[in-house]
Image 1 (cartoon, rainbow, N blue to C red):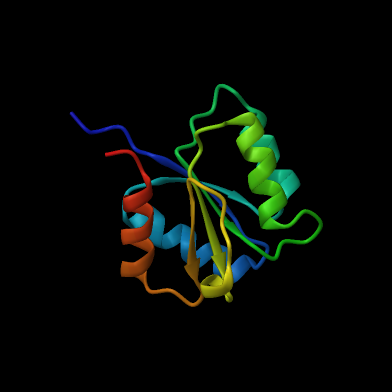
Image 2: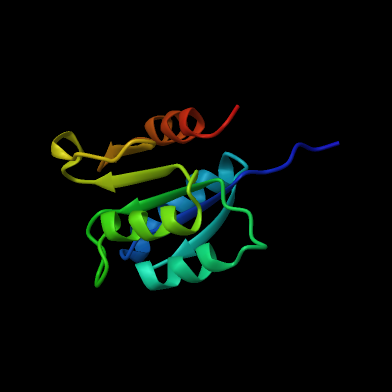
Amino acid sequence: MSQATETILVVEDDAIVRMLIVDVLEELEFAVLEAEDGNTALVFLEDAGRSIDLMMTDMGLPGMDGKELAAKARELRPTLPVLFASGYAESLEVPAGMASIGKPFSIDQLRDKVKGMLPA
C-alpha cells in the first residue's frame, strides 16, 4: 500500500529553473503541477477537485508577482502553505504561514524546506 503523494504546484517563469525544481520534487516522490505564470497557477488553484498541498512560487513572475499570486491563492485555499523562491530571500518579508528559500538553493535545502512545510 503506497502512501498518498502530496501535490506541489510549482510556479516559475524560467523554463529551465522550473524543469530542475520539478525534477527534484518528482525524485522526492511528490506529484508536481507546473505553471509558468500566476494566471496558469490560478487555473489549478480554482479547480476545487484538485488537491494541492503546497505552492512554490518565484517572486518575480511576469504580470502578477509571487506575493499577489499567494494572496489570491489564499483567498481560494486559506490553509495552503506557500514557499517563495527568490534571489533575495534574506530580505523578503513573507506573510504568516508562508516561507521563502533563496536562489540558488541545493536539492537538500529544497527537500528540507518543502518537507518542513507539509503537514506530517
